[in-house]
Length: 49
Image (cartoon, rainbow, N blue to C red; front, side, top):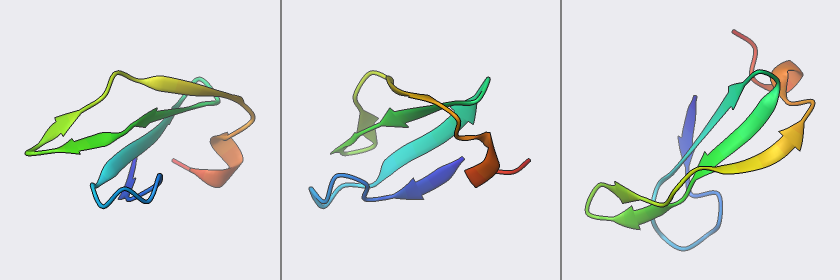
């Protein structure tokens, strides 16, 4: 799992890999996040366990 402002909106976002697929939860502020967005396969090499 990784935290950071992925979409440059000023809110902290969450990124995680599960079953080789990258998932993003965009931060909405006040500790609220959007629904998970899947961004394709091939990401495990960038987020080693």
